Length: 320
Image (cartoon, rainbow, N blue to C red):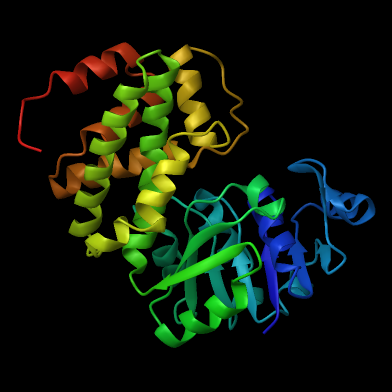
């Protein structure tokens, strides 16, 4: 089966670089100028400067050309997934679609799998998620990811197709658990970044991460996920990575909040929209998600970091 990556941001480019080690791969950019620049310079100077594109990787701005591949990896931000699929439904229909984004859609409260099913009913879909930074993947550094697919046979085929020399894929049929793990960890990462940025220390971050993980499990299980999925790569693994590294956009955004510094708003921070979606889900389902709700308020400017911490520390005492 042939493969193309739709979306030439850092993560999409990194996936294409890794997959090109196995054979020809097409990378689609919506920008003709960026596609031309990448073909001429053989690197993504805007998103991954200094990391060369392999010869087996071709770049195009022609979606009809890219969508000739059997498997299409959709490496676009979560909040743009529905629009991208709706705009290009004819080209995507009949292909196997693998979402490579993490988050919850603000307006609907849906994850990437549900958005794909709603936008193109009947399409065979999967989700690729887990602990992964674009720079690490593009440099050939090893990691392991979760491939979530409700169809066991398709999951096995995709696992074989998308596993590379530096990407080891584990499969699951628990798509709900995989998509919620990848989405919710971004919210907790903002909180952990704010905690460190405000000088509250590593012990406070560890406590926040642990209680945040409890929230992740609470919501995921309520939505039908298997608890063990959250203990895997798409949950705990991704949470540990994202809450502890400056390479995480969500963590850096939290750091800026904690330090009261400006942040480049052109940078995609999926955790902000997800925090607001989670706060609404918590209200709708009448479950306690205090950290996620506080992160939403903090991102809005409704709370200072000090006020947010006081609010969390002054909650009623309870058993763990």
